[in-house]
Image 1 (spheres, helix red, strand yellow):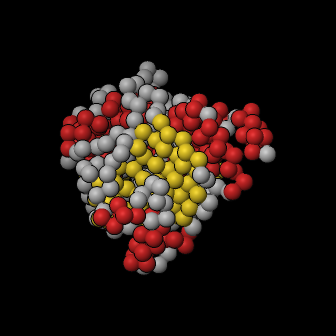
Image 2 (tube, helix red, strand yellow; image 1 turned 90 degrees about the vertical axis):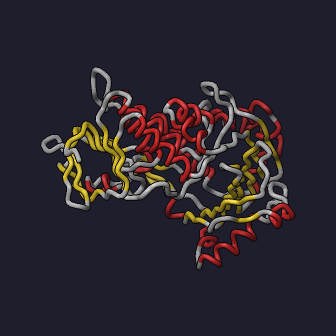
Image 3 (cartoon, one colour; image 1 turned 180 degrees about the vertical axis):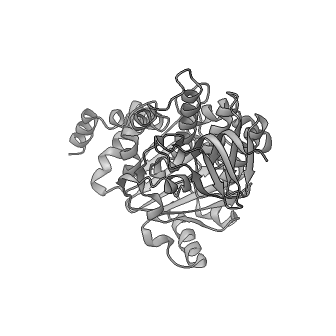
Length: 397
């Protein structure tokens, strides 16, 4: 095996494979290492809005994914406190629907695509440390692996999740924390028909998300109080099954009786979904994906953010300036309103917020802005402008 590369990417899932593809296409010699074997899964909300689907296509991953799987594309329904807004998305570079493939399918498609454009991907390779302290005097210059190998690189990228080994090795703290209120549990079902929509069904104290994933499977995500995911697997499964039956408008109980839950129930405890930023780069290193910044998964921004960060880094480091000095400012500007917005979706609505859901449902322009906010075409401050809020609450009064 080679002992030196232009770049080592730690983490091979959607953030790492996207960066490997973007760098390899620009003639970088790239090694991707991951402690996991593939195909394999990870906890995720799975969602990609039209902007994310467009980026996935540009990276070449969408074609690979669709060559292996049947992936439905869907429009959106948001039901909240008795009101519904339903419709499509504004097209982004030719894509006007969302997708939600399971990570076992999406991440594998990314790895196959990265290999096809020339990146070397080594699963089952655990990074235990970095070569270099990441300072001006001692920049990062490679990685140390658990099997004793030391591999050099001009750049090391941490795409290894919220518990990032790269960030921990550099002693980079989490900053600007935010907390939600809910835990999540989800499972995959066979026998729930795809009607062309993904659903948010929002009530006081509980939220159900229903989306088609791939190959005839359907995902139901239960968002409830933290104690919902406590206890044994059978106890969690029982609470989950009871929970999803509580939304008959979205999932008919008779249909659930005929459908089959084909997997164990996966869980995301509330502490796993706490938000943060980390300093994203320094001499010889950079972070991306959940290692860099974590929003609440309620708005399903993580995969899209990771791909955008990957493309930014590859373009910046392949430019004439070959610098990422503007990376932190770019990331923070892109995340600015959407960080707090994601945690608004990570907290349960209160009954007195009913005028907001009525406003979303009663004005088609607002409903469109709401859907397009997920693709970063509209800012949350536009969806929830002072003028709109004043009008909605005045009407309710």
